[in-house]
Image (cartoon, rainbow, N blue to C red; front, side, top):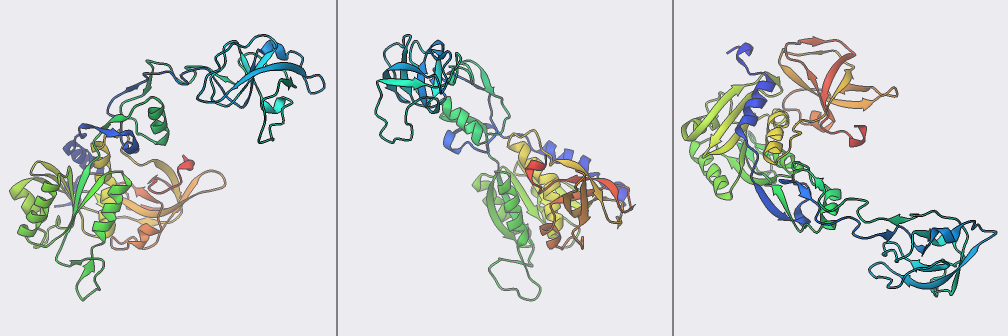
Length: 421
């Protein structure tokens, strides 16, 4: 098989996404809804605010009574009561009258403005603050001053949140204001992960000759959790079909929506993943024109979508980034499945083998606003520290074997401050 027989990254990604439909809708308590995707439009059943209320502490009055008022020529108004948030003033304000009012309290009948406490003669720094008989008004205000009118935020019957929107803290606040206690959302994916290989040992065990620790299991779990999905850790499968089937059965019993494994999808004698999936499920085994990463298995096991990633740790993480991450996001109901792509100036010369190459890079903004990038050093697929140092992946296009310094390239912004965009 030559590289001409390998799949381009975009073709492989489409095939992966075709395997994974969005998950069904479920209802979750509002207290647990953050991070989910809305499964239905949300329509307001109330107006917000639900009543006219004060935007500040001060006095509710008729704006006309403040005409000409200033610190040298204050206007005195009769204080006929006060109203705090959560209570009502039952009377009606007439000309020459005022009601002391607190932020959020309903506007008394007859008032058309609120003047802030700092523009009156009241000693607002006095913690006791007895209600005065008269209040001096030291500023002129117009009608509607400091009044938050009913429905000024949203009105009853208005569609306020669209299906497909990610629920953030601000959406939670709106839903709470509308009294939405149960939220219709797309089910959160439950992803079963397993590593394969007789050489793998748990992280807490000391190294012995010929063994390595299971870093992929932990790295992939962290990648999944960063997407808001749930992880089912299935451990390490030995290089036997029986042990792999046992681990997969545990995932089925746990109710996983997707399997992701690392290693076992190459052409070695002990690479058992493709054999098991070809026997017990359905599998496509591809070589993808990308570096790092090349072998990729995708299919189903017992009707559950399955992705088999390479075993080298950097290859596994980059392959997860390009294939598993979009698949999980699609299952969770997201429509924006890709990381931001930005143009960068790559400062170094670099060679490639013609595959679409993802260079682990440090990206920074220059004083002129452009983004520049340099590699993080050794780009071997086993060099995990190259990922630790990176905040993006610079893409050398397929078919390019050499780039000169200061070449403009696209970069996947995998770990960059959001405020840049």
